[in-house]
Length: 275
Length: 297
Image 1: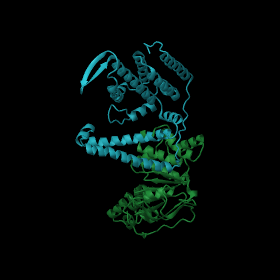
Image 2: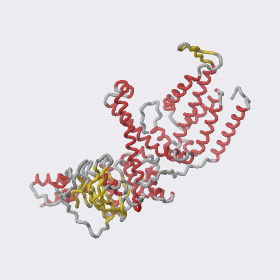
Image 3: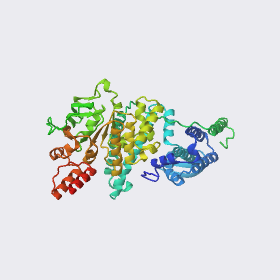
Image 4: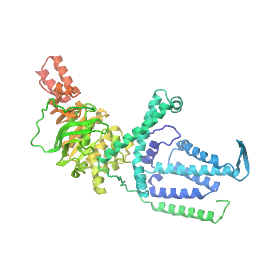
């Protein structure tokens, strides 16, 4: 199983692609269209839902799907670091001063910041929403062969977005492996990511600048090789992506009905204390 | 290479074959890069049908620049290049990439598509071939290079040798008349070099494709080439059969190269045994035959 890791906390593209190509679970045979439809519905659902209980239920369901697909749980927990940091960087400002029962009061530079029970609920709710979406997105990436994924994206997104995605994919791998090789060279001579940034920040900045310069250089060579094979500005995927099965269609319909029902209920304030 | 005078070839011992059809004619072509570096200078070079011609020269001698001229990626600033009757730089040569395929030195630069099949199909689809036929051409090309099992693999999970095979398949799928390979065996282990070598011979013998190889591996050129062109400072300083070139120290050293290992070994053996080096073996097999014969004598 190939891996290119700078840190255990950064999602490893090599590993993700390896699972995508080699996953043998039932979800690997599910139509990518079904998965993308469910992803869209899930985005809508977690956006409109406010009930912590329902959000936790959805999150648990997504985790179960992830585990049933045979995907690595430990890696998932490690990869949660970045979304958690992202959410906390947002809620660090949002949660203070929410109306509700005050829990903590802090005085900073003469200003009083109060953390209320509602503020904590907002934090938990945002965190669960983020982790649900991250988990489900990783589940899709790790159970869908890249050729299917690329074809679906090419058909969904307009040009030039689809072209950017298709061409940047392999380039991203090459840039990552180039950076990994340079970091390996740094470590092989007694350096380290944190240590070298602290001790030789300037050199390290130059190393990363070099990665970008080399990337441009490589991009030019790739472009030249494409022109040599008749590239005229459009690259298309020609894979046949399996259409949703009967069960896939039924699950999309049921899930759509649930989402619509929740949307209507939230608009009409029915069952407000649950939703 | 920033300032050059018109070269005077040390020796041009190549007699053009009259029976073979000329496919490429490079007529005193020069190319200067925007930064002033001279890529090729008054280069004269020809490629005939069904031959393997090796461009041998040290790094920076202009081999890769010449190769990039052959399918119109670069156009000469002076002189002219005619490929199958079409002048490079003219409108009629716009689709020259269909006739002359280039396999680049770094396979990672060539393989950009998500899967091997998509990459090999890229050329045929650009040629306007319908999807089903393009797929069939791609599968045939992969079979020809012995990489059918890699069809659904992702390029980033392939070894260097496998990537090189896929790069060749990507060109072969377009069914070109000429294939130019830039350092085809660089960075490869002996096993994969051997596979590439056999494949190049097959391109010529089975598919009747003319092959141009840019290399500084003279052992490889000695085994495979029908004709060798020595490149020095952007020009061809000598050309002829491998034996004529590689047993001529003045030419080889003048081009900044060293004779192939077999040549060096044969000469050393002849000196050691006190026998005259009358034969000119180029491969290990030929060396074994010649030395066995001499020992018997």
